[in-house]
Image 1 (cartoon, rainbow, N blue to C red):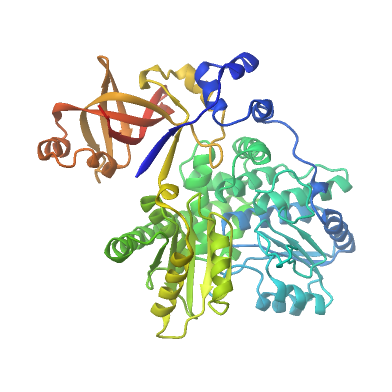
Image 2: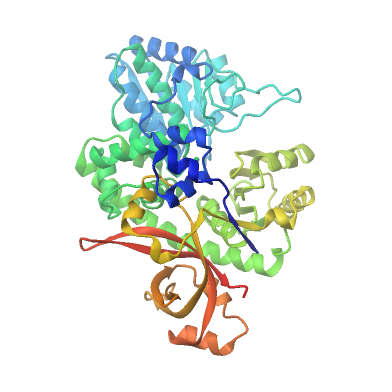
Length: 588
């Protein structure tokens, strides 16, 4: 069930103060308080002061000491895009400042075999290599054992992370025993934006460090921070919005050899939020899912175009393989939900043969289809591994923590935030099914969500006839970007159109071109969710046959639509196109 909700807000003050088109003012009025609009529109505003972050002085003083001493330093990152970009930011930022004789390395955990985070085995490996300073990025906030081991060995340790922090019963932060812990979620942290990614945290560390040297950080770092922000699905508001705006500009005007190679491999002319999140990001992630990121990390570090092109091609091919595996996993997961899980409010899907690296992708797709929090669990070498993806009203990490309180021996490791989580479950050989069912039962017993709360909400920015959205108006709408989580591309709606015909597009017939009519004016729009349009024909065999045959309906269907206008550039021609995101029969 969907609830269509038109955002509220008085648009006239926005029109008068900022001289905006009525539709643009209406969009802003439903999203941004009037007193914050000037700040929202100013995408070139300086970033916040990095020294507001807790422990920043400790971290920077320690970095400066080891850089000038010429120490052996290792960065421990993560295998996703945020982990790779934060590693690249620290590496590219620290390398020019390291005195001769020093040694700077990185270590990316292997997804298969080592899993997420700074494990004790990696800590022991670094001690054997006589490393003098370890700095994590996009991980480390929960690695108490590894931090304690480094402390025993007398090795300096800096944590830079953005994941949520566990607290004591009294509400105090539980932090690893490190020389410095940089995390915006610390209660003592004074930075104005808490929802930033690991790459953005690393970027702030380098900004603070370079200010001591009265230098400007390498220009490509902001591009990497933007890429991490987009791919880690951070809200594109305030600091993140400015970071992504300026980072996209950097990647388009001064791409590193690696970014240029990834653009070429993905057939991208311009990097926008879509290209970053759905083309470059998946290629980079594929290296960690089906390969080794210690190998592919060089695509973000190398200055050799030929080397970067080779790595980008390998990543492109791996991503193709990953897509095929994901499609198969989604099919298996969908069958399981339809067979036995449809009545659960929290979906726990057990797919033992699915590659553990794509569990999160499968969970995300199932979550989108059923609009329910979804956990996908796979069989690992030792026990079970899983990933979760959530809906806006369900805080995934908090719900998993409740299960941990009831069953303290269930997890061997877990972590995440409101929207996503990763975890490992303890299961003896032959007991996997029982453990999965215990996890499923525990989550569903404690869930308090009502059907009303779980209903999918479609937030509409304004009502506007499709034909009224001109190219000039679209260019003003585009200025409200970059669009993404927290600042989605505007959705508009129109009621009481006549659906005259549907034509299938593509060899797979997985898209439609709809002919819509309103007051004798016809508009063609595309739709990429065939099943959504099929549903409005249910119960009428004649209409269904006309639909499949691509014929004009003998009796036009009255529909309401929610659509997304976009600028389409093809063969030098620029025009407006309309994508139908939601459709239903008109009530009258």
